Length: 332
View 1 (cartoon, rainbow, N blue to C red):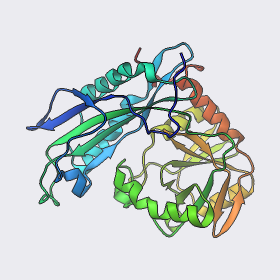
View 2: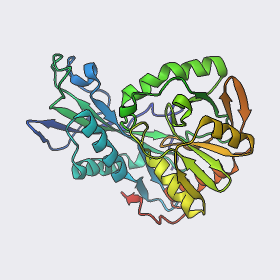
View 3: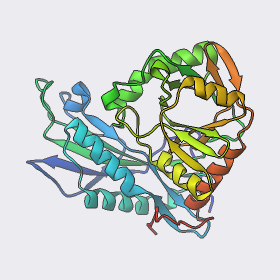
């Protein structure tokens, strides 16, 4: 059966979504409602004080017809971490996972074949309708999950030009590991400036020369047989795809070095033939084709290793390779 894929990534949603409310000091049973709208008080805490966070994960239709979720418990754990930092009610693992699984079951007929998927967007928002709580957390909250059939975000051969930014930071350093809208909004001025002035797709934030992440993706340097990426700190997002890529890379025989490295090292490595990739749920892996450093564009000579890593990971997701790490949760 042919399943159409929307032309714009994340623009069409399954008709219903699960909603779990936190009130009276506890999480309530899951309810289902239309995904067309959400009733929210104009004074809701999330709208005024940014008490919100979200996740992104995918369900896949495998080669044998089975539907699987990829690493849902890792995404749940990351949202729980975000909730703790934002002082939002912490979602309960079992109810959250059950809601994800039930949503995928209900949307199963809408899940396209490879290389497309069903993108899932769990969102947690503070709902206290009190604008006088600028210095206090929201005690009530809503967790809802959108499901969107999406095509392959990655377009093989498309240029991925990255501007290296050493003066500005993506977000407040202590908030980097929180997946919240404010972090993406704070990066927006520099991303739009990079597009307008350099035709760049993204900005790699490297405050004081310390290579961190782009506005929307983790960053990895491939230097021969060595994978180099910044170690986990509060300054940047702890990507589930990043972790998956590092694990797959070890399986393929790469040496993985989680360490700090500088723009100078990055520039020298690229000039000597190193590759670089961006990692994230939407595109999985995007091999970088060039960097703009100090106003000069430097070509990345090869994307071969990046493509191979991408294939190794997507083969697991689509059931074309063994899931050695227990990442897949079969739904139906």
